[in-house]
Image (tube, rainbow, N blue to C red):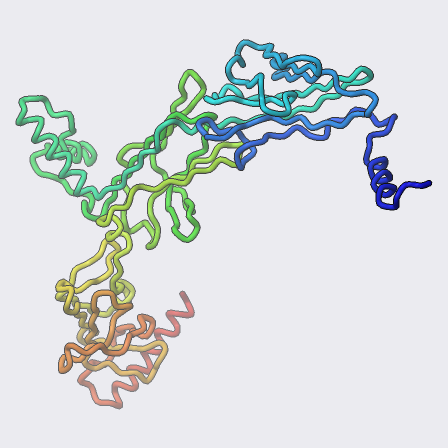
Length: 428
């Protein structure tokens, strides 16, 4: 009487999957288990293990697994006994009574960066042996956070002055530097009696960084941090220095680097990216939010008229203040900044995009806070927002008929002016 059909299929499947005599001992892979990255991180609350996966014939089982690092035996498992630590440097770092798979290398907390190295798993049976290696990277990012500060230079000077004043009032020697003397030394030849302001203190940022001890040596990139990319997208020279400790770890730091606000794109900040070679370790940092610094960087405004001035246009701006980028804002945030544009006497306004355009009496423009640009201004309706003015539509002032000339003379002069402008544009 034969086996039931289901039992026969099961027996056939088991026979197909069972190891057969003649299959050689083979190590399938050595891998790191624990965490989400292919490295061991000191301080992580994760159980890490180096796994040695192998396959053997059913009639030649594994008798022993030996682990070595840099050629020196450190851990041995025998099928008939308990695991043993062979290197005293690993006592307390390797679990000799794991819940499962005692042939694997189970690391115990607290972990240490000295666990890094090339490990070799050696598997022995009665008839054969095999080995495979794995290079273990260990990252120690330090036990305290990275410190980064970005402040306006004016605020730093106020804090320094306050600290110096406090020290002087206590009868102690000031620990800070004399700012007047410092600036004089920077420029040379100044006796320090008159303060030399070579930077706009409200538009200069003071940037400092200090990292904890990091192992192994990190790659630190500091510069423009983009919110869109959540990373540093452009490197800036910041005077970064790296210091190596006797134990092989490194710190990175720079102190009071001056950065002009106008050099930072809007919607960006100052930040640093820390990476460790041959690992996927990456930490991107930026300072804690500072509303004053953020306002200096991101505050909008209407653009200045540098190009118009280069084209000979007279620009008079009133009732205005300026951002660190030179953009214009109304002095009274509920009102308007006003700009009057005109050509010098004896000059005519020539519109490259509109040869028939005229501009006898100049142009009045207004800029409101949080607006997207300059608008035509009507004094008879001061509260009304006019049409936006495209900067490319502004004219060039060239020597020619004045605004009081007759139409025929003005048309001739404008024709000549247009010709001159086109020749100038083609030559440029």
